[in-house]
Image 1 (cartoon, rainbow, N blue to C red):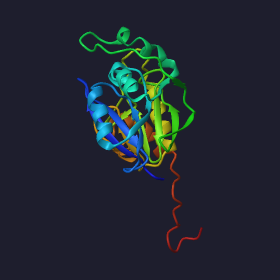
Image 2: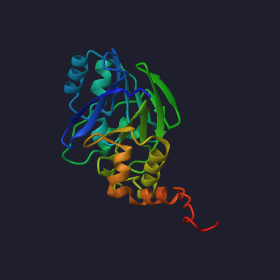
Image 3: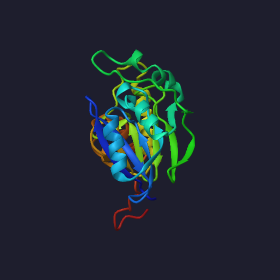
Amino acid sequence: MNRPDVRSYSVGPVQENCHIVRADPHAGTAVIVDPGDEPERLLDAAQALGVEIEAVLLTHCHFDHIGAVAPVARATGAPVYCPKIELALLSDVMRFVPPGFGPFESYEADHELSGGERLHLAGMDIEVLYTPGHSPGHLTYAIGGALLSGDVLFQGSVGRVDLPGGDWATLEGSIEELVRRFPGETVVYPGHMGVTTLERELATNPFLTEIRARLASEQPVAATAPPRGVSS
């Protein structure tokens, strides 16, 4: 499975990862995932790569992931794809921003997503996965051998569940579904911190202990040959 070319940029005061994703390093079009802040920097990055932004994809609508949506969408003319459950957060951004951050500009999404959709954008087939738990409408985008996971799964950690709409059991279920469905070598591009793989997180992430235990309990036990000289 061909892995896309993903360029990541940590932006804003909480260092959110925005990703510019294209089919390969020579492609002239791309999608941008979670433009959270510093719109000028992101637009300059797209120009330096020589790509036209064909769409803006949002994993969820916490302020640090959507703060630059309006200026980026306006400058590029790219349609915005937003989780349906969280449309109101994008259209009235500052109502949900903690004191000391912003100001950010609200935006009306062009398309709503619920999970289960398949998109074809910038020459890539993109599967939209519903992965709630960190936020009620959270989505993950599967593109080739990569997952754009937003704030579901991090390198050595997971998304927080103490914000409105967060729920640990739901988040754990979303992560387990990703681990079961995709190969271990699948590369995870998260909304914060470094790039990782499902295999690495399953082996080392302390928050995945119960998932590891469940998967281990399902492994078939190898048949043991009877000792030599003992009849079966």
